[in-house]
Image 1 (cartoon, rainbow, N blue to C red):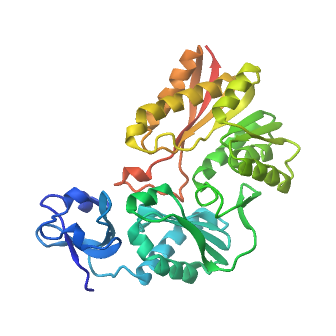
Image 2: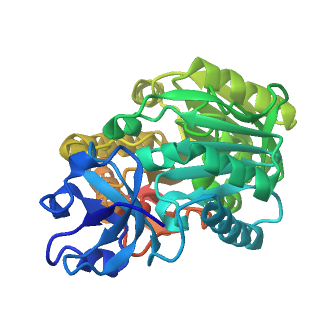
Image 3: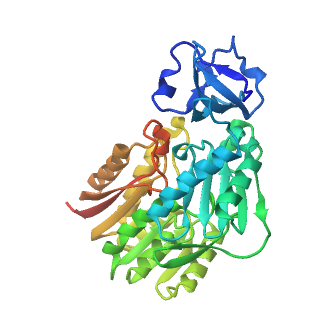
Length: 397
């Protein structure tokens, strides 16, 4: 293998040797290996200051994360064969976890393929590439996916804003197969039609699956309010588990229409109502109308996308939780979540506690929520542990 060398400064190899996969630009010995000498996404051998190899990765001179390690040692090339191996290892875990082929197959760094996400929907795979290195390997990734899974379609949903940090264009297209046919996800005995191109992220949020499973024990005979509903995953699962009435709220007209279709598809239309509204405005309107629900579910998009947004985002979580509790019945359940990596678990629970005290109520935290096991956490990379939530009982003071 003839890969160019990326040298680290003295002492900057410790974090990588401890298990991390990222090299920051200020850790590179640019006197020996100028970043400007590398093309975005170029494969390189990463070496410490004593010329001892750490592994093989890829480089982007335009990014704060200047390189990402893909394999340790220099025995194996970063090619289709390695990607096939990583896919098979990832597949073995998912097949151990789930009886049907509906899951996140690859979760970036946690599955040894930094910058790549693959979601599987039966015979359809939807991929997202976030880095120049993986973009450069896109054809090899597609060939590896076809070899391992033989999908009917492979879609590329490469329109995430994070790509701008890597100086990559945003686009979405079909990478393998022919246009046509419906994309379905099965969860909890229900079927949901998704849009792999026009939908959010890859079209579905597998990370909340186990948390939605936990909801079933709490909703039989209850009125349920599902805020930020998207395609109605939480709400329809609640209806299927015996909720007497479910209201799903989302700001997107397309999402609201999809909720109605999915409710009809699963024979739940008589108990599910979809409402298009801004979440904050709708909760205020419900509060003013003195409406109350037995279970309120708050699963918003990330309010804190960057570290500098923390103060404003923390306030948003406090506000949404307090509004949610204002429409809870006297002995109600609040399901509250955050997918913001920069929002610590303790801070989210603190937002709940501040809200109940301001309303002169009290809360009991019953269950702590986390991302599903098809989104495994890399112990050395805190950013992979991003989803947190709580099921809380809210009582009068």
